[in-house]
Image (tube, rainbow, N blue to C red; front, side, top):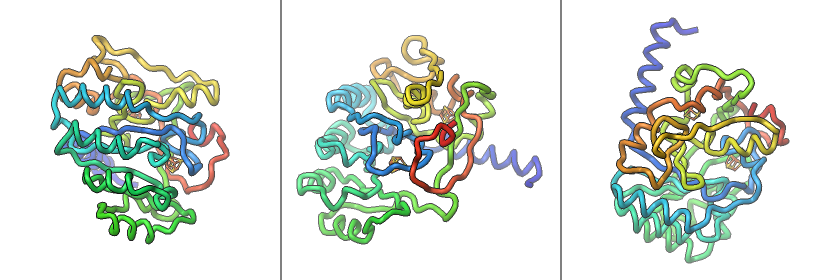
Length: 280
Ligand code: SF4
Ligand code: SF4
């Protein structure tokens, strides 16, 4: 085990890296997924089928862009599996229209890429959207995906290719014996994953989608409402955002929900059995 000074230095280094990291917004366009991964951090195996309405994306992006169209360095389009959203090409174009200089990444598991039509590829190419693929231990022709990107003039990258035995970090949440939110926040791997859901921005998907765990397993994870829509709670109302500082503050301060995030454990990939122990 490392000595306490080395551990403290590591924590300080990690926190500094998170503070310096540019602001990023994540749009979980589809709650469900065409893969079924044990312990998915977006809770997809226990999510009902749901697509983020295009109107909701439009209302959120138009407000945020009016506040500051250069506030984000990246916007990630993800899910669940974002390629299950029938308007995915239109959403790429919408993001680019509102945020002319932002980096757009479309995070996919790759399963549907070979079925995407020319309109999708044209939208990715025209908006300079990067197809960012996570390589799972399942049967997908990842070389073909790279070739398709090259053929359509779309940028390709591998987002994540996990090491054997450490596919995911399992984020254990606990509403029965919660911990100290400040300590939990210092150990958190999700700082900076600002997530849009239901016209609110949460600091991470773990918090944004906790109602799925409540509904599936009868638990009681609760959110605290912010004062004035943006101070001191577990989220910021999109329409209450007045400057990028509102979101920087949400990103860098532990929220009340952080008390539930008690442990992080490396875990191997396996199909989900929708068992509470995958998340709790
Ligand atoms: S592919 Fe990604 S989003 Fe889909 S179930 Fe697996 S971890 Fe979750
Ligand atoms: S609620 Fe807080 S500690 Fe938990 S994952 Fe989100 S940012 Fe991290």
